[in-house]
Length: 488
Image (tube, rainbow, N blue to C red; front, side, top):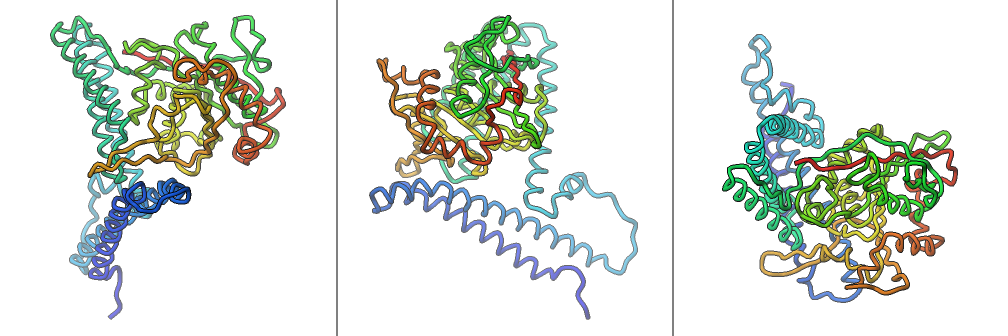
């Protein structure tokens, strides 16, 4: 008798084997990492290179393990469907409507990736609806109630960040870094103290200490393209023509001067469109770094609070505001995007490039950072990253090279992305306290200009992905600037 459909017992065995294979790979990823990162007797330069490469190998192991586990679930569901179909074989019955969650998951049956993406989209939609409803009620409430709701929402948000940190540990097998533990712990403690003060004052006082609030982005404002030392009539500097990597850095450094200008009262992000003949437009998003150091939750989101959020592995309000500015600037889906940032701006660029929801919307192909700690950002290998660091600049080192304490007390340090890290000679002049003068954005522009004709910077600029953004022709370039802000 011919067999139609699935061999149920064979399907069960396949599902079990897929699950076991996924568990084995996940266990390998977890158990080998402590050995590779410091527990092995192998020492020397080759051992260090192998340990650095292990991050990529481990990510592939865990990704494959997740895919096998998800495939096991898909096969198991088909087994159950086959049992149901076989039980009712030969009987004619009217079709019934599929359950709600089956309807949501049906498009994913052909692909494990589609299954995961559909579940995530449903979760994100529920979260966005709930968040929007809460914000609408909060904005309509009177001041004491609004302050209490804001303080409670901040505690909820910071608790969620701590839970996300635990989820990353569970799904990747790597514990949170020391920097993530310290910063998320501080942010959660501050949110609880804000709630305490707000409650004791019956909602009349909310100090908003380390409260990152909500993102706001302004409409794009046209900016001239040319010599950045020449000011326009409104006092705004021109955007340099992106003819080289140093010119890309110069645009990012120029964005600092937008703070306090009409339309960019808080701080600005510049967006450059490059339109070459016969090619679709490519976009460079230039993000300045910290422009305010107080932790009081004021309108400027590139402050100390923003730094701590990003150091904790979270998307800061400033990062969300950059995303909103890109959407308002009309960057189309599929258009190549380069994210360029200095200091906190580089942290924002790395955090966005590591966020799958952001890269699902924007086709990020390149990231260029200077003076930024980016070792902890799990940026996909499909994105070409150039990380420029002066040898004596202390800021790129604040993430402690993603130092992590494993169960048992072993400490490891590794980079979570494949960035091309270029250590630049320190510029001339006094280093300042702990070398902080080496962090200056203008010094980075000068250093790269001196060294970009050869070596790794030249190699990066000649890559096909990078060439989409570089042109000496000012007629192919347009530029805008958008205010990014925070609302409490």
